[in-house]
Amino acid sequence: MAGFGTIVIDPPEGHMATYLDSLQRMQGLPVTALFPAHGPVMANAKARIQEYIDHRLDRERNILAAWRNGMREPASIVREVYKDVAPAMYGLAERNVVAHLEKLQEERRI
Image 1: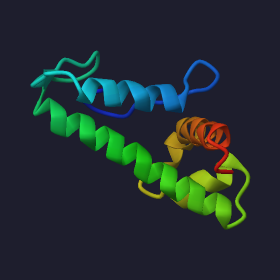
Image 2 (image 1 turned 90 degrees about the vertical axis):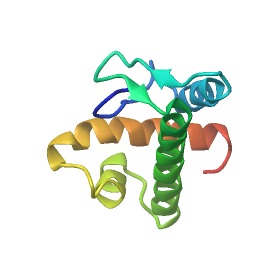
Image 3 (image 1 turned 30 degrees about the vertical axis):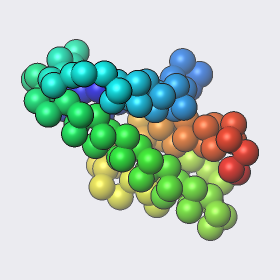
Image 4 (image 1 turned 45 degrees about the vertical axis):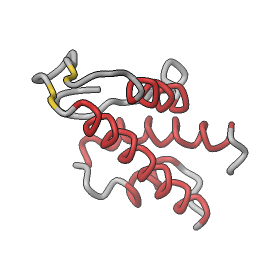
């Protein structure tokens, strides 16, 4: 988690399912604040963790919808799904798309 910005899950080092599992494990801990490596201390730890989980799952739903609509190239999916992201960040967003696609393949959803 980061106090500002986002976390890039960059395969092969990054693995989306593992990342989401780690967020779920954090959600189960008796925490009230988070001390990220980047940014300020975050209060309301449980709510912040849930925001991260919800954000990733929302992105995943949109990536899956783009896939089902025939988009197969991560760059095309980024342009469709990451409209809220500056084009200068598309390269990083593409790495997240690849991580989501790998997760979806592992789950046999695509």
